[in-house]
Amino acid sequence: MLSAKAKYAFKAMFALARLGPGELLQARDISEKENISKKFLDLILLELRGAGLVRAERGQHGGYALAKPADKITLGQIVRIIDGPLAPIACASVSFYHRCDDCKDEATCLVRRSMRQVRDAASEILDHTTLASALTMDKARKNGPRKAKRTAA
Picture (cartoon, rainbow, N blue to C red):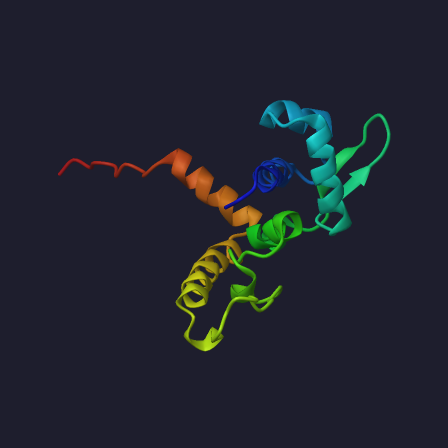
């Protein structure tokens, strides 16, 4: 399950991805707009900054911006930075694998096999969805299907 911290990280990153070139957004503005505690948001932005996804400029006109283009940041990267591995259990993880102490035979373990499918499905979506593609999908959804123009015969 996605933590509240990761959910808020997504909200903050989407807000930053909507910025135009050279624009900055202050944490206070993100906090108010997205209904996130400012203290909690500061911790999230610090982690994202440490991972190289966000940059900060100090000063009265300072703020935050993406450190990379929105089409180069995946939702999977954000989740892993904030929550760690995508796999629900350690033995199903690719990057953070750890054998279960109670497992007699990993090769035939139905729990591991099932959780690996969960991990793979989540990874397929999260690692192939960028901030930019998520915003594009949202914009298309908001615009709705275009109505065909009728022409007189």
